[in-house]
Image (cartoon, rainbow, N blue to C red; front, side):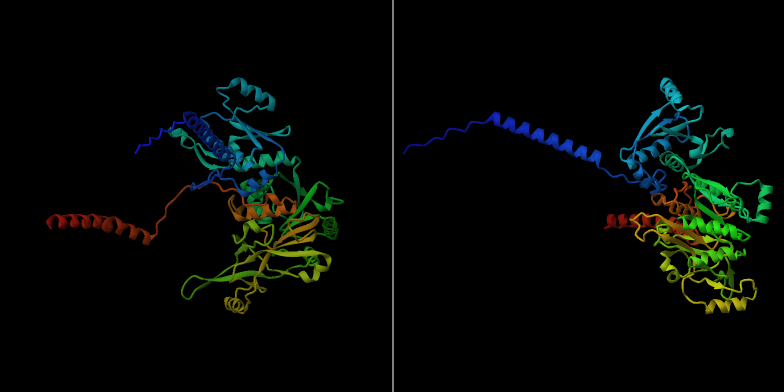
Length: 508
């Protein structure tokens, strides 16, 4: 029997080498593709406590509307207190703009030739750190002092300047809106009926204004003007008609009624697809203005909203300031849905009569409702607590409306853009005055949203960015007691138990 021997198979080194090269090429292209996809399509999250650089919805929606290219040139020296903040914030702008923003950083102390070239181009004359925003040949300067509030009180003691509030997003977005939209939108502020002033007054003048027509609304004016809107005083008594450049008329708490001629000007403006923001002072007698609103299906009732709150076991206190919430069914307030706000001073209820004006293609929509527990008191000057408590018990549970939007023409579908007459009415004129609000209150956001809706700039309706706040810890008595037990008893007890367990094991 012969033994059959098999010849060993030759190793195909060339084939193995080719396979290896192909594998390496495939791995290289796979890694490159993953990196390219990751570079072009990625997501960022801000998980910081303050979210200092997270852009607001308003800014993001505005960046989505930009058609051209925005160029931002940054002239910040490294020792500027907010240079790092500005750099981080502009990175968020670049990401949100999706390639529509180019940024160049120039250190004016090191790159003198480039800085001089750009200074000459943009005609910069300030030595302060700043940035220049350029859009289609138009440019605007934003200084470091406009982007932050800096406390210099510690410099004399050898400490550095401290940033107390970073407002970079407000300043940069405002400048971009100015450049992209070009001409400012104008709001005509009606005067001549003892309305609050729109200018900031001196302390002595402010006392006189509060005695005459309430606190000014200069804070609101500054806030709104940062959105490319200009306030212009409008005395209807001197005008043959409302000027064409005025897109929206604002009437705030007139103490005296308008004349027949002024009412006719408002009628004509409304009929020509005009826009009106009307804040009513319930204590003023304005029958002609109320009749104008009544024609549109909005009746301002002669009452005041009140509520009783329990301050003790048997004690009740009457409050006249109204706690209310914004409804989310309207484009004006959809981003303020269920946000609460306090309306100081007198507030009356509003009755809507949509059936009566539906034939005229007028749509009414409530914007603000008082919280449960409030009742509308017609005898609001009485001091008879028993009578007021009885009326409160007899009051129904129907919601009490204090803000409403009116639209004539147009379309109920937000996706369909059509010309229309628009109006926002609130039965309180005190909540926007300087002594009733600060920069982070809801009143500013509501008036901003109302103004943008009236100006057909729905994409800019949103909540304003918040000023960063200092982290503080406050512990009540119960929390302190729990912390004391944890430190003095629980933590030592853990080590006692561990020591006892070790001793017992060794003893066994």
